[in-house]
Image (cartoon, rainbow, N blue to C red; front, side, top):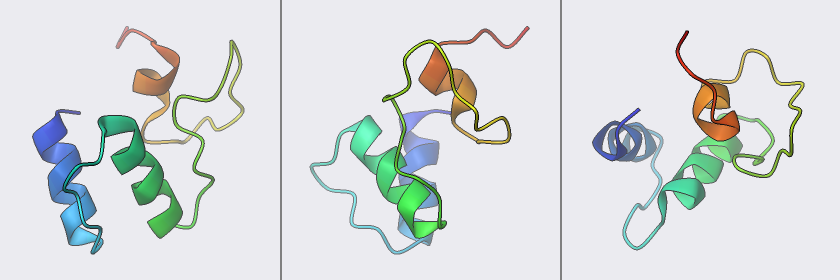
Length: 63
């Protein structure tokens, strides 16, 4: 997901986006959606199989 798409999603949830890094934006979105703010914190394993951000977070290919 591009930064512009992330910003758009954050704004739709009422999150102020100025000065937030990508990781901070995604964590704020996770909280607003009622999820754990864990983006970028997993090391080698993540049990959140349905997470929108999982591939980007874990560095997984689209394959």
